[in-house]
Length: 585
Image (cartoon, rainbow, N blue to C red; front, side, top):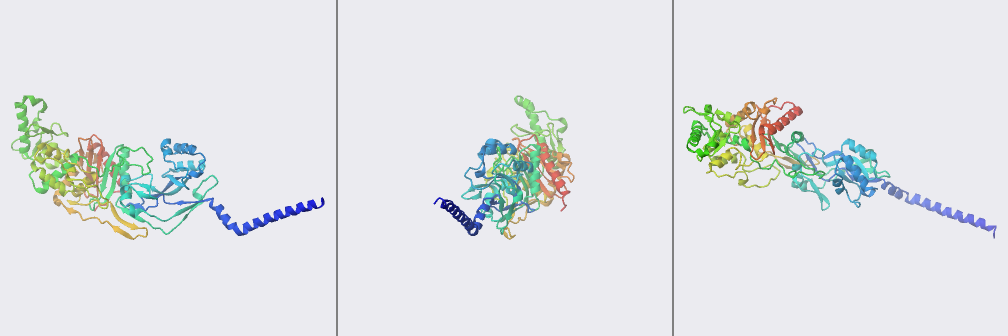
């Protein structure tokens, strides 16, 4: 029996290893492919190449405003070994407040990879990759919003709702149904033991693209030039660049903008699109009075207006001792003679009740003025007298003719305002009429309205309709919907528009807009400085044959000829540097 024990043990061991070999062979032959697939799957991750499954928004040159390829920070929450350490590291690298970054960190139960932040600069992306943090990677993907984030209020933003990315503002919301449901391009990436993915270890699974595109009138270069001009100057406000021939909106800058990913502390007005907001137009409104008077063939202010104001001033000075301290002595050389047929500005315009309007641009008066000089030097006294002679009804009529009683933008619905939001004054009250004539209380305009109005002055009296969207097309190029430009309406006599255009050129060469006089091709413009602190400059380039209308409104400033003119000039110079001299029509 003892001799048989070793033999039995050897048999048992042989049987055991035979069973193991049989099992391994069966696994290798019968389940090898299946198990290899499982092992392979543990190393492979798939994710969307496009951050949001939404269609493209393109500029007028078919350049992507959304879905722009950039370095994106990817997180795989299940692979993060130390969430707090990862948060501290990323906050330091990305220069973000730790609390803000931590509040947006995905939960531990978030499946797979998620795009956490886009627009990562190359140096930061390299630093993140070299750190080899488990579950943290940087890859080049199509980010929904580029790091420069142009026209944020116009483009809008999205929110994850009901299992998809839904547009909640701007074009994203207006055309949500057209942009939803993109299907193409999946990334297959190999992941190492630390959950790292690299640009070298992934490939694209191409699928038949199916999505829609919004083709805008915006020029991405012009948009960024306008926004950068504001930021460089350190101001907030709005800028509109318009094609005066067809009304195409080439740029619509509202500063400050906002981060559509919400990685910033927002200023209170960041979500407000100032391009459509209403402000007192200040002295830029004087062009409307000038155009209306010329178009109607009205006699302009002359000696009678200035002499009546001067006589009242003398009466007040001699007969009302209690008011003499508030009545300035007129400059003797500015007192009009009976034979003179032009308006003479003495520095103050008096109403019948003794109240007066000062000429802020010349305390002692501008002296004799015709309409062109009055517009160039922005004489308050002249335009108050002109407004009194015209009357409120005629001012209202031309506000309507020149698109200043409502605002419209083709393919972009705007809030419906009441007429009183734009014009609200009492025709029978001289002081109300004076305020309106100077573009102050009683009249409100948006930068968009102002641009359309000045387009009519630049293009021969034809009022265009502003347009944002050209068409909606499919990924195959089929046009789904077209938004054609509307034929401009002739609202001013062409000769009248030409006269005003020449006066605006004089305002640049010899008047309040002189800061623009160094433009290589010349410009025409009118400045405005509102009592509320907002300052304007509205005009066109080149001077001879206008190709662009540019309107700048700065929220706070000393004068339109300073802050607004600085931004206008920078925009023009940057456009010329980009394109060379503008083509002549």
